[in-house]
Length: 218
Image (cartoon, rainbow, N blue to C red):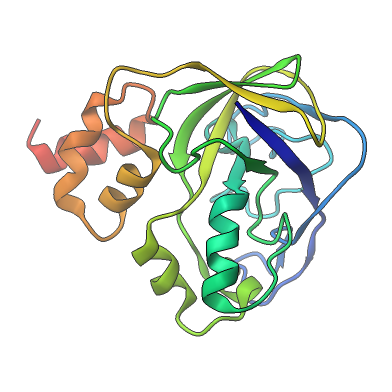
C-alpha cells in the first residue's frame, strides 16, 4: 500500500518557454481534500482532473487521458541526490506526490484506489518538454530526464472523489501484461523498436496504439 504525501495544484504564471506564454507546471501542496473528476476531452473539456489546478496549454495537457499526474517521492529522492538540490513536492508538475507505490513500474491500465472515494487508472507516461526544462533550470535536462526513464504516470479518473495528504493508495487491479509506464516511455522516446510491445496494453490511448501498429506493420 502506498500513501499520498501531498496533493499539488498550480496557477498560471508567465513562462516564455511555454508555447502559450503561461504555465501552471509549478505546483504546490494544498491543505484539505481536493476533488478529482474526469475532465473530458482536451479540446473543450475542463482541463485538469484536479479541481483547482490550472491547465494552460490544452493542446498538450489535460483531458481524460492526462487528468492527474503522479510522481513517486522515492524517484524525487534519487533526483535530489543526483542533482544536489531540494525538489519539493509539486516541482515536477505532479498533482500527487506518492510514497510506497512503484509509479514507473505500474502497468498501463492498472487501477488505484486513492483515499476512500477516488479510483484512478494508469494511462500514459509524462513526456518532458521545454516548459519542464525551464522549470528545472538544469543544463541538458530533457536529455537527462529522458535517459533515466522515470517519467511518472498520467492517470484517468474512473471514479471521482476527494483526496487528501495522507490518503492510502491501493492497487485494485493489475493487468495481465508487462507494459509498464517506464517501458511505454522508452518506446515513445529513445527506443522505438519497443513500440510493437505496447499493443498488449488495451488501455493505452488510441493515438499511441496507432503509433505502435504503424511500427509493427499491423
